[in-house]
Image (cartoon, rainbow, N blue to C red; front, side):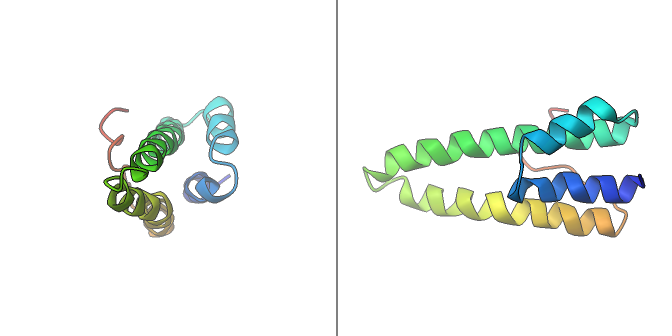
Length: 101
């Protein structure tokens, strides 16, 4: 599979199977770049789930509602940016977790 399309699939997996597809690509791919992107996608989704959960808990106190809106938008927009960058053939790191991997 072409490296570009593997990256697109990994980024797009955030909308359908955010855990299974990055794990499968990490296990089955031999390319370092694909493994790095799949780990970043998996970590990003995990961090966003945690942040959204904390925001939901704090939204009962009203202070979590703005964070819930921002993190909800990030959960949708960031994978779309990754898809566009992958289609253009550019290397791109996820925000928050990009420097961890």
